[in-house]
Length: 237
Image 1 (cartoon, one colour):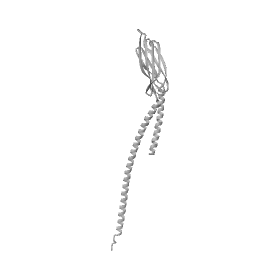
Image 2: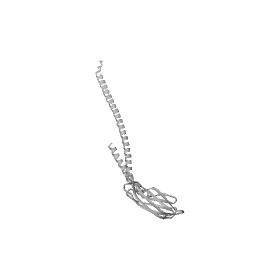
Image 3: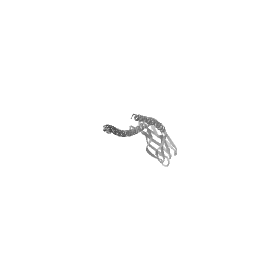
Image 4: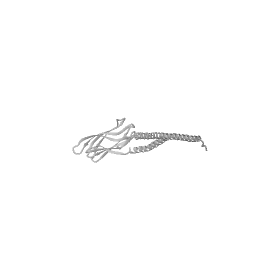
């Protein structure tokens, strides 16, 4: 039993060490992954397309840049937009930043870039999201105003350490379950061994008893035979 406990301790230590090494790589990967950028449509109409470019994954407590790209498919003027960036703290919506910008003119097939630096609170979670309202005038033909409102995901907030702890807890629970399984197997095997050993000891005891009885009986017959032989009357010649 003592040897089994030592083996369990050694196995658990090796498993935890391996998990720490692997998860250190996970942290490094997650931090590297946070620098990757992605680009998605904020909205796309027949005359104006707005794209958002930002890191796909960001970490709470850090800063990152959001780039908005305005691309005109027609000659546009008096483009006005307002943008609100939000996140979640304790699962409650929290406003990060509100901005408004104007573009006097945007010629067909041209682009206009806007870059915003965003600070993420240390206790933020889930995502960074944007809400945009935009209006503009089309100069081609009869000028007329247009408007568009859109909501979009800017980035996903990651918490690699929390994820590692949760993963370690899952793996530790799995290890405990496996340990309990093998402990049950050991106890079952030990009980079977004890039972079989008892049977063998009982059989050996019975054999010993029979051997003793047989020995005593043999000695008794030998002594009785010798005694009767001694008491046999002598022959008269």
